[in-house]
Image 1: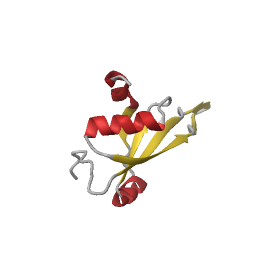
Image 2 (image 1 turned 60 degrees about the vertical axis):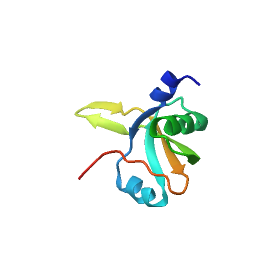
Image 3 (image 1 turned 135 degrees about the vertical axis):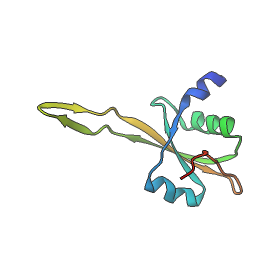
Image 4 (image 1 turned 90 degrees about the vertical axis):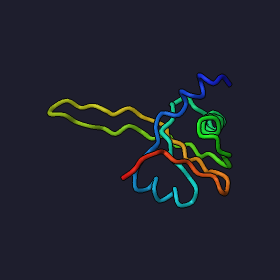
Length: 97
């Protein structure tokens, strides 16, 4: 797969309570493009962060229905990936509190 395509697979890391809880088990959560496959996500993470990926789980997140005054709408659906790294590997996002 081309490097330009792999750079477009990962959208952003997901920062939430659940994501920080699974980070203790050497798992990281990413928002990925809707057409990304497990193999695409694995290749992208290994290329961008220079780590060894053991496993990838992909989840399609449905968009939530929202309402503003009398206008009904819907947030777009998105896809997230849980990436499990090999023992001794880690990713530093450079986020400091």
